[in-house]
Length: 238
Image 1: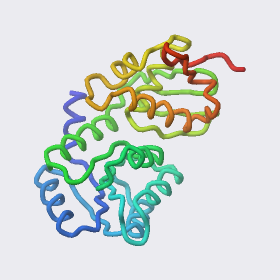
Image 2: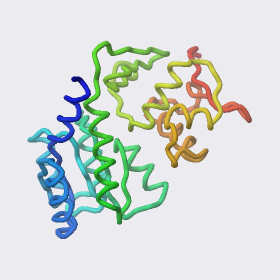
Image 3: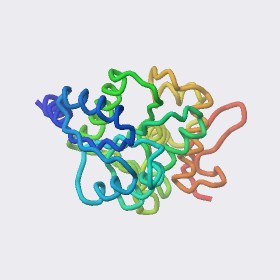
Image 4: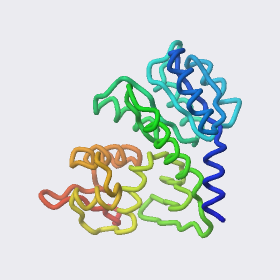
């Protein structure tokens, strides 16, 4: 019954599509509405800001290059104001540094143009399932000044809410479940991301870098890099 309720909620999700390309907007809107979603549209960054401050959505699809305000700035404003709705960035920028910038600002996933609508649909379903899947009996893990609620996917640092993308959250969750244990990048990739094809050594290093930044681990004393061994989460304060 519980999983059936999640499936129904995903199918009925309300999506904000922020995109200035009229033809692409029409194509995506028609496809998503045919899939059963309710889709609202904003054609520039200013309108997106207004809608996000005025209405509630289940998922946000946000283009990077927008008139009046960039998608990155819209995302930054939304997260800094406490917005927690999943965000899928849409962009023609394919570089790793651009992807990292979006994830650093609080994007949950990233889809490079051009893309197949079936891939878009799969990404949306995955993000929505994760956002709805909050079973009873949430378990809280605490290490140093970090407190992580596994089921509700909430992280606080010194009592302040911090947003992580699903993959970065999974990485930190795994390390907090095994404090002081040393893991190779292969082990971290497998445990945190499973069989995801993007789970390379470079991807793990980038994820570690993002997580360190989000938790204020500037000097790398919380998530330690042990030469030729891997990474560990040091549970002992200096």
